[in-house]
Amino acid sequence: MTSDGRDGAAASGRDETPLERADRLWSEMLQEVRVAQTGAQILFGFLISVAFTPRFAALPDFDRNLYVATVLLGAVATGSLIAPVAFHRFLAGHGMKPELIHIAARLIATGLVTLALTITAALLLLLRTATGNPTAAWILSGVVLAWFTTAWLVLPEIVLRRRSGTRPRPRAGGPPEGGPDRHRS
Image 1 (cartoon, rainbow, N blue to C red):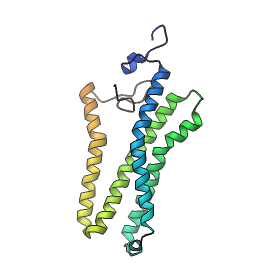
Image 2 (image 1 turned 60 degrees about the horizontal axis):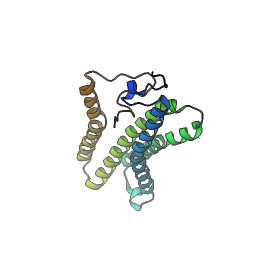
Image 3 (image 1 turned 60 degrees about the vertical axis):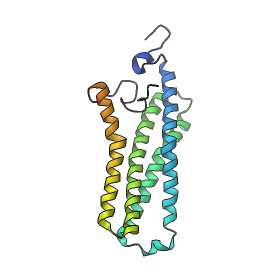
Image 4 (image 1 turned 180 degrees about the vertical axis):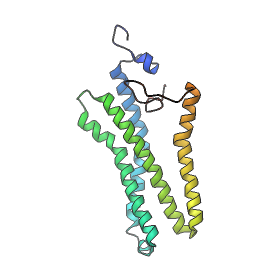
């Protein structure tokens, strides 16, 4: 820590105080979550409307149960991605931004996982209905889930391992390496 209270250079490669770092991380997290949050809300809205279509009554039991599971996943995804805003509203002004960042990062991760599952389940339901080929629907939906897993989890992990040469470790006072503070711009 320098004489002016700045220790951010060691933690993030920047000359910023812990509070400045928390403000930056929070802003970055909000920008990141806006994309996923909007997509989850739109998908959830469409999912809700499906039950009110004439064709819904003709769905077999499996597809109705899949629909219910998909809507529940969509609700969890939407709620998880909106939750950081509620946390911020309740905790603002209490000097808890670093804690908020940790909680928000976990909520966003939960939201992204459940969003991927929601999209996969919705795709499965759609493909089962549209193609009439349950086997193809499962295979194609599995491929999409594998893509989400690769693009959202595996590739970032590979990049972090190449950068550090080891598995990322949580840092004291900040999110885990590769969490919301992964941008060094």
